[in-house]
Length: 76
Image (cartoon, rainbow, N blue to C red):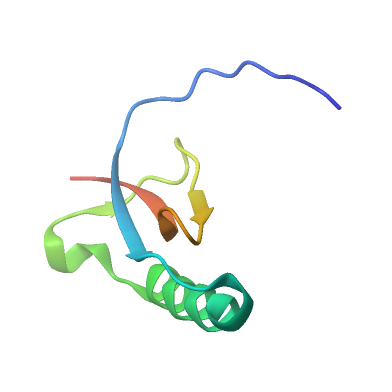
């Protein structure tokens, strides 16, 4: 195991998500739907462009507490 400290530039993020769900019966469908939307979304319709050259994408997965989210960095 390694521990790493990295400086990550600030960015606005678009958050694609689904609320809490049952992991055992819905996980594959929820993750598939959120990821399909996140990876096919065109941010130019909102006046943004992706900022993934400078900032990382994130996923948050806590089915019973948060749900599932994909966060993608954008800039004006």
